[in-house]
View (cartoon, rainbow, N blue to C red):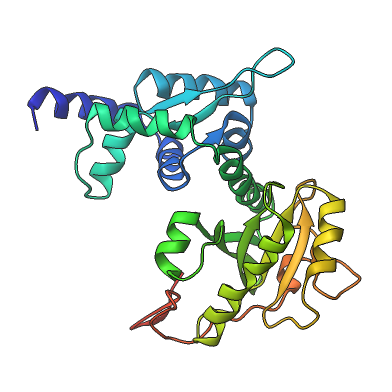
Length: 282
């Protein structure tokens, strides 16, 4: 590595706080977050958040983009790692040094990704759990896996995310299906087959959470769900706080909290990343 490039990254280190490190890791794991999402998770004052994000962008640690609104004005800023941010994360995780071109291409591809709204919706689900835990000391989001990480770890399913949510001494695992209304509901229901097969092979029997854009779509989905549920499942809408009693299990009439849904970590088999030679791992 040329000395000038190494020195430029080292010169940034004194400006990076623990909160900045947390943000860089979040963006490394989950690719993109809006100003509002970052504010709610990591800052108290919105103005302080905006100023700090601008400073991190000036250091090259972050990059950003936004789109025009159809009726005028602009959508919020979308934040992702800048070149120096990619370099910092690569060094922290012993990954190859990225080139400027590679970093730029990542931002360009992300901004043009037709699934960007879906990605932000899935991230928003976990952001709300994170914010709830921030203000409720008895609650914890012990695991937040992106779609990419979930697919890598579980291999045979393609959930939009996976998490472990704890309140006091109760921990519930879940798989997220973040619905933006672009797929026919019949195809959404068909996704349950892979979760059922995973559980039958000794993998976790976690509730599948369908997070839907409207109450109408939620009602329609329940009409299509099979009468017999081989795995737990529940629905709620984007307008709700997923940490509250908003989840309607399949075949039920009353809503419950996430921690009231049945959850089983499964058996220590090859398809189950919950276990290693030392037992259950977070």
